[in-house]
Image: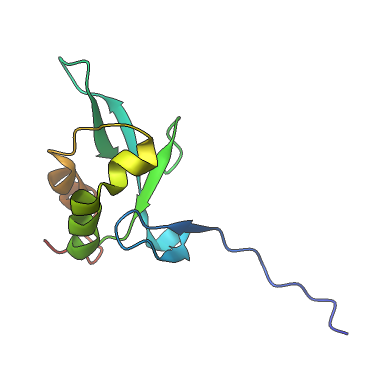
Length: 101
């Protein structure tokens, strides 16, 4: 019997395609109050440790489109959120990764 254990790799589900992937392959998104409004907006979480509920998304335009079309953000954040600037925020956050829109 082999006593070595396989290291644990945290996994999360993409809110767009609903596929499970290692956490380091996904972008964490959080909700926060929108400036000058009582609405909540979605923004990228570069540290991956902002307070509150997070949603995870592949850095791929197809997953973003699926999340927007299927209501993945509202489902993940358990309520309505403003996703108007999320694509721009993600392009600024992930320029080195395979983010394509």
